[in-house]
Length: 419
Ligand code: C5P
Picture 1 (cartoon, rainbow, N blue to C red):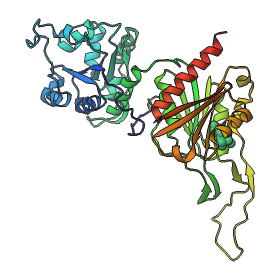
Picture 2 (cartoon, protein in one colour):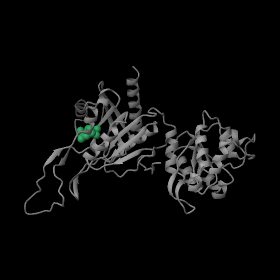
Picture 3 (cartoon, rainbow, N blue to C red):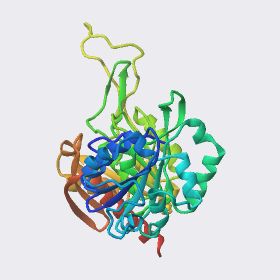
Picture 4 (spheres, protein in one colour):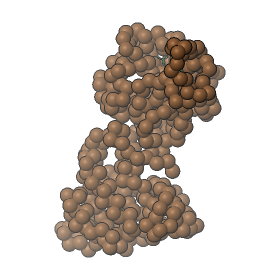
């Protein structure tokens, strides 16, 4: 499973406002990470009701989770704090989702059989399945994870409607190395946030080019630009949240790969061209956010060019292929099987330049933004240009604009698909 190490820039602000989350902990050393997750959920605006099994309470105390969630923690189904003594009903009826993190092998085996002899498993069984989705974040030793019984149980739980999340790989608390670590709190926060996004691109394959390119001059120098890749990565995240299978071709950027997104790293425009061409035949949507260098030097020097008495270096330049224009001219794009979107980053005459670019590149949708106002920033303002005209999208976070653009693209695609 790809990793998502959330960066502040890609983490949405208050995405879980007004969401009521039941956070369940079953027994496992990963319980200490659930404490951090609880804090992150609260920070994102959720109200959190923590429920722990007795085994979980061996690893971290209910006091810790009560302090972090700002709510009393429940461990027993006989908890007399509930006036009707029915915590399993009362605590599930207003929830928007239940997340069990960590979900131990034993706890999942229990759920599989519909057993309900402790409060948490009882709540999983008693929750209204239509309105309260159940997410499980497994955590266990690698041998337990690989055991056919665990794999069989997880397959069955998925069939029964639970979302069984993946696991991380690496050092385990027991000293062994392998699969079975619980996903990090940031990854779990992402999974929960994505759950509430509309699945407008479900099953669609989306290819995104992002970031700058770097055109080498010699082994130590080159030309590049100030694109950070943030808009492209925000779009990758938004498309994945919307249910798409997302592939990013990224120039040299220092950004974490959004959870669930596949990534190919490239350096030059020619590398990016090759990577996009190799993958675009499987795509339904191509979004070109990359700031591709227009030119490269004809001959990259094999050794560092030295300052000398011959004056300035004599460099010959050749034009790079226009990736977007090439893709937009392909048979699949022309026949409507592939929807292409371009980005124009300008410094002046944004509307006129972006409109001209849309026509010249032959794409149905061109998004204009001002280079200096977007490169490296966490927010942006857009001009969305199609055949019918121009719409201004006011300054907002890149993630929020990306979600808006994904929704917009989904509408355009479905309008094309419905004759
Ligand atoms: O660089 P330019 O302003 O022409 O970029 C407009 C659009 O074309 C962007 O979407 C960019 O990703 C794409 N492009 C490309 N290959 C190039 C140049 C630009 O795909 N060589």
